[in-house]
Length: 237
View 1 (cartoon, rainbow, N blue to C red):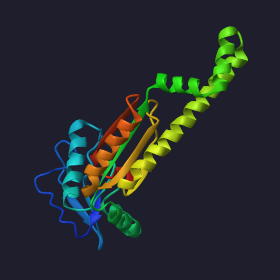
View 2 (view 1 turned 120 degrees about the vertical axis):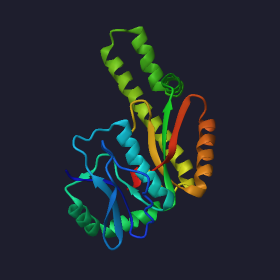
View 3 (view 1 turned 30 degrees about the vertical axis):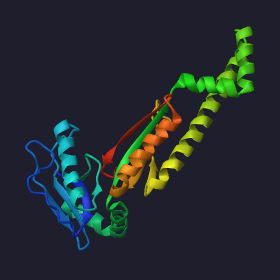
View 4 (view 1 turned 180 degrees about the horizontal axis):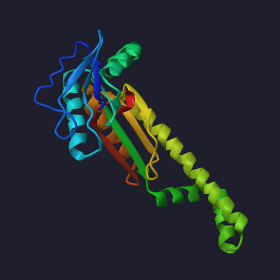
């Protein structure tokens, strides 16, 4: 059957888990696997577990309850160990690492920021600022059969797009990092050139959100900022 893992806490966490249950149908009963310094909140793993809405919500409900009372390391949905003994062994083996991470995330939440830019606006900027792009663009217009020039133009535009995205990405993260404890890069999507998570102290959450709002205003309407949070600190576990 296996042991389903929700989160890891310090041994002194209050673990107020009454009134909530775990994943599966019927809902699994929660229990703990303890060592001297750590505690894992677990349940029996249901067979053929899938990311159904009810199970994902149950997984997050457990984590939200734990995070409301103290530091917790949230596990990704679907993490299953062989049995309770294996979980206990891992807790002992990685004790120092887990305790360090618990100290880092204590009192913090994760905020995930995605930023996209209007492609047409970016291309107009490149055309305006790059003499070589303008030269190649004119040559391909004058000679539609100039294959080599078309290839060179496409490669140059691609390089310019990536360079400007990288510059904007670095600048935005640098300006926002001062209100966060840590940052963690997330693989960008096809649409978003920036995808990054910030670990933010609870008392600084309002200041961080305001900083993101101000950054979006400074970048202008051609940029699309999307901020999600507060979230369990998945990216920092």
